[in-house]
Length: 327
Ligand code: ACO
Image 1 (cartoon, rainbow, N blue to C red):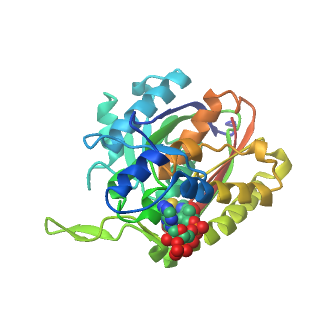
Image 2 (image 1 turned 120 degrees about the horizontal axis):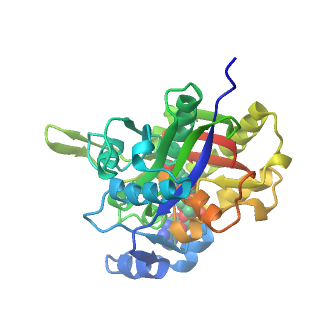
């Protein structure tokens, strides 16, 4: 009889492009376009103080490469030991090939499976769940799971209600086969009827861009939906794992808005000390936000081996989901 196979995170890493843009910097820049905003408005509504923007020649796979190297180093693995690469991104380098294939080449390896997952801000939760399934069924032993975004490319800097909220960055984990869990349970959902409240309504056609490939969001509608589905996903995931809220050591939710994150923690009856919040430092980095926050908390000494962590994502699609794991 073979022992049950689990997947377990053995290393985390992240990377932020060096250009730091504070709310005051952004307010000054927008003022040159005749658009008014302030650090006070942005911080009060979202909890964001600053974000990082990549230089124009830097792509998602460039950010992913640095995050992946940091995660591999933390796991004590070489790139040639990786047999699966999944990149969650909504801002890929090209229409095709996938940013995962490009990342694989930048890592100096070839041959292993590599593909992208597109679930916007839930992308990392989706990618981690897919990697977990592949590891548990034996089709991969050492997976590199990355969330990487250059969201600044799809922001409309004439729309103050969205352009102040997002940033660029990447986060990664190495997920390996393990006799002990690891990932305890996950829960994924989508409801395409909400496409209109959060989308980038553009497409490439006949060598041209049709529509407006810039982010559009009905912030209030997203807010309401996010608070509801994040609680549901958390409860379902805990139930699947046979755990309760009391078992959670750390909540690492998608970093979109501190009010949504604190609302979710309160609904789960978690003290705010158990909430990992990096939204003030990074803004909303979409698929990169959860692995970036996870890596910050691991390197900051908060999340330690043996801790039970609930990761949660919510975003365009509408998509949402959660992963409960033991570090
Ligand atoms: N600076 C100053 N004023 C502003 C700005 C700004 N940057 N943006 C909007 N305003 C004004 C509005 O024009 C409005 O003015 P009015 O009352 O005179 O019309 C006022 O501020 C209030 O605007 P609201 O939209 O009502 O502000 P709200 O409190 O809803 O906060 C926010 C907006 C921060 C976007 C919030 O709704 C939110 O966080 N929503 C959720 C976003 C989210 O979670 N996204 C996650 C998914 S992201 C993804 O998947 C890619």
